[in-house]
Length: 397
Ligand code: SF4
Image 1 (tube, helix red, strand yellow):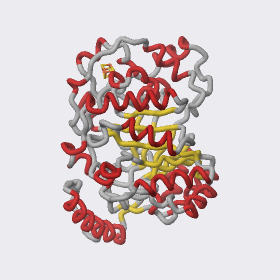
Image 2 (image 1 turned 90 degrees about the vertical axis):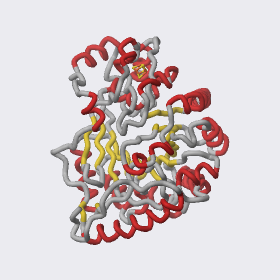
Image 3 (image 1 turned 45 degrees about the vertical axis):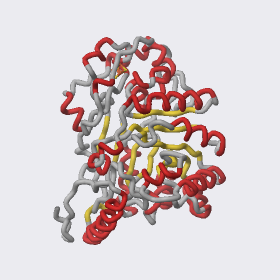
């Protein structure tokens, strides 16, 4: 299994997205506390690690932890807004530290839309420079995009731009907005799209990429909104391959281990041919409408075979020699017996995981100062701050 774990190395950021689901916290990481989490992923026999945040490049020890993770055999990846990788020296340093793949996050190539979503003007140029620098120093570049109300109608325009101006980028990832946490929760009405709002532009974007031989993944989008490309659904691939995911959250959630990939389903889903391998509607946060789902009648086996036979997938190991062998294994796996309420809460905390970072006096003071300045910026931008009481300097909340 090519399981990949996430480590949030910081939670602060130099941008202020109104739909950030992982905003600042008082927790801080040292090199040693990050090393413990890398070791945890190695002990779980994971294939790789994604260093994320907040904006991970703001941690002064990022190159060092990337080097350590690489040395112990993990495939090292990072999700970033690109602001620091725009500096070629930093890109070189990360490449030399063992960073193999970077996901650069861009929501829209329309400057005015990107500025509204990022809370900072003129970020596109640094994202483009980051992509070019990473490519120059041998780091594979992917582009990540959170689907939201403001970019929903032109996802294809953004893809066409990347294909024309940065033809070396071969893989793209869309995440539909998670409206259950952070500022995404407090600004649901402003940013959460209806599925129908992005259906056409997402389909156009996927067709552009597929025709060009590029690959892509889509998370939190039910298969009835991407039926022709159902094999590209992150949840569907995890369900088919029986994969899990660990996220080391740098907050009170700490470590979460996700083994189940189904969200919410409508009564109509019972008649859908893809029900068994579909993640359904992402219902955490109660912002999407289950009435938007409608059953499809395509071959489930064709979707499964596309996933099993994908040679670009790092988990491609010929584990299942045939569809029948996969079906036998699939049937033998424990079934998801969780209730809708349990699923809406999200995966549980992993009680066996090590502590993720710590709350120090200095961390609390920095957090308080950041939160005050972020509140001023948020008011100026017209977005609400995330919920959360400020802790006292002794760490109590
Ligand atoms: S109808 Fe339900 S099971 Fe079928 S694709 Fe849509 S969400 Fe998935």
